[in-house]
Image (cartoon, rainbow, N blue to C red):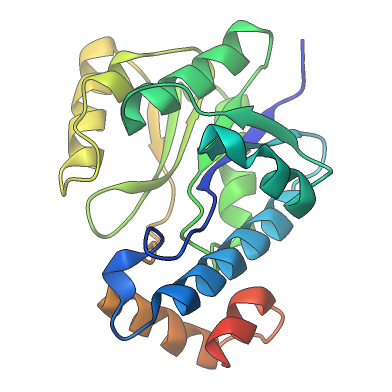
Length: 218
């Protein structure tokens, strides 16, 4: 049995293609720097979860060198699939079908995600939960964890909609799965969420999300 696995899904940042909903007020170049800050802070968070396999599921497929330089200590897995649901299912199913006990995937858009939430995800899975979800307040989720492959949870849900969490839980209920929800958090995709992030950083421990802080000069 392989150890538990913790993955992040990420894309190589490129001006004009990264965080486009944040400009204005950000320029394309600043959006790239900000997302790189998100990535670095997310990777630092992952490194604080011991005893698990750490990996980056990345796009595009020619971005391996970029991510190797960013995180030489982590496994790199090219994403496979025509949409996000397929790519998440392939990532989780591949890990679980090759002996991983529990697999957790997080996004790369929540640089201030509390470390305790990651520990809670593995605690719940190891205690018997079939599915763990970290809800976002926009109706999606920042984390999904499984002990067994369940392709329907990912392939039959239309991603990036306000009903992703609800639809996923409905399928889990049909499958008779024991589902557990983590505390609600948020990801940063819109100008309003960016403002929320800036307010949070201005009122929290300076050690939280240092790379993102430098980009935002908070």
